[in-house]
Image 1 (cartoon, rainbow, N blue to C red):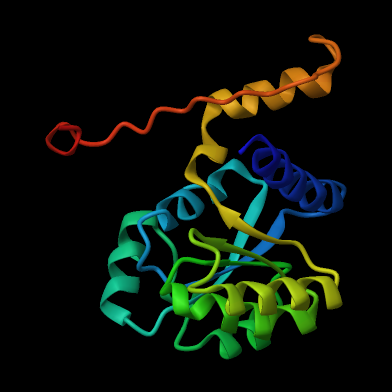
Image 2 (cartoon, rainbow, N blue to C red):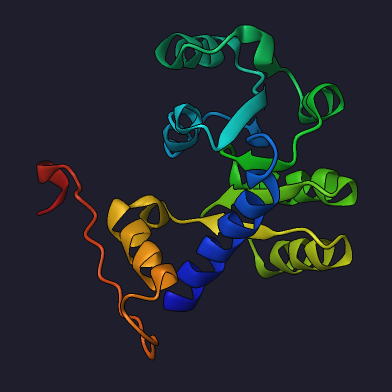
Length: 186
C-alpha cells in the first residue's frame, strides 16, 4: 500500500512539475458515473488543473453536474474521441464503467496522454496487462485512483517528507479511516 501511495504521489508530482512552470495541467474526463468524479470536478478551483473536456453521453447527468459545479456544457462531448480531438488534454481521468478503462488507455496512450482510472484498474488480468504494455510502449503514466490519496493528512506527510524536516524514511505505515455512513458501519 505504501508503495502505491508513493507511486501515486510521484505521478501527480511529475505531472505537476512539468506544468508548474506553465499553465495548469489540461485534464479530460471520461464518464461521470463514478462518485469519485466529484473530487476532480471540485479540484479545478485550486488552480493546478484545467478541465478542458468531458466525454459523457448522458446529457441529463452532465447537465446536473454542470449546474452543481458551474461548468459550461460546451465542455461536454458525446465521445472521448471528439473530446480529445477538440481539447488536446495532457491527462485523462476515467470515471465511467470499468470495462472502458482499457479503451481509454488504447485511445490516450498513443497520443502521449497520461491516464488515471478509478479502482479497480481493470476487469481482468488480460486488460491490466494490455494497459500496462501500452503505458510502457508510449511512455505514459497510468495509475489507479485511490480516494485516500487526496486526504489532507497524506498531503501533509508528503510535504513533511519533501521538506527534509523529518529525516530519512525507512518505513511507512498508513492507516486511513473511511467514514462510511453510520447505517453501513454495522
